[in-house]
Length: 64
Image (cartoon, rainbow, N blue to C red; front, side, top):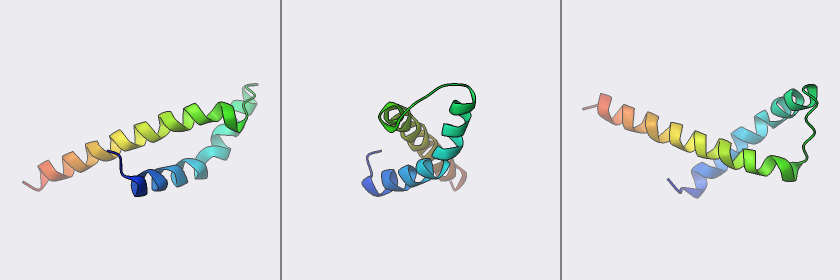
């Protein structure tokens, strides 16, 4: 899926939870700046996209 609108929504969700993730890493003594976090955000967006597609496929199958 390469839907820019959905990607923006996923990014908003990721950014909403970013402080919690950053706090976890800080508590573990792992120091990362935003540049370091970018690849992890991309990975998270890919995971959310796949989960969305899986849920969409499941809903389509259930409605048959």
